[in-house]
Picture (tube, rainbow, N blue to C red):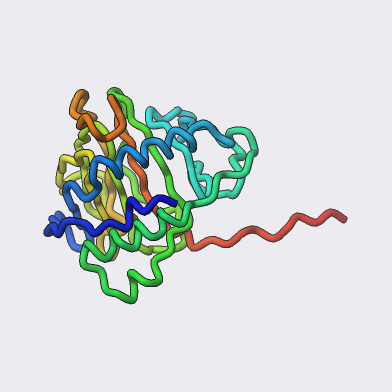
Length: 230
């Protein structure tokens, strides 16, 4: 494991668009982003290749590769039953440590930081035309905070309320290297990505176009019991 993420972060004051939601601009360095992009390319190659999931019979414009648990609407499984049936890659230890540092740097209490152990990550790739409609992250049994990392082109990130997909919401620019954490009162807030701003990726992030978004989640799930046959 690289020591890249053991480097102390430059102190920054988080922006809080809503209670329990925190944005830290420029949280990842260019070197850290480029290293993660290299890992993404390995994940996307399999054993479960990157794919666009279908929701209600409509294929998403965002493509996803999963770690730890495989997500498909509206459930998690250890195998990618909607792709090729293969077991998903494990969630790497460095990502758990990075998730804990994200909570620390956004002012979460030390006891929550210490026990925060995400067990799944959805790694999304957005090309210029990709969009993500307003939705809640509620397929998890746990309401532990979600940690989100952005690399590549800037996106407009729409962060709303917990009761409706419509207003009130706040539009934020998430740039390459930005950290966004939402939990507490905002854990079930509706959110989406209405626009990708092409040509805005910095030269040192490892992507020439498009956007990678990693969301770390605590599913609160356990492995299903082994199947038995009479």
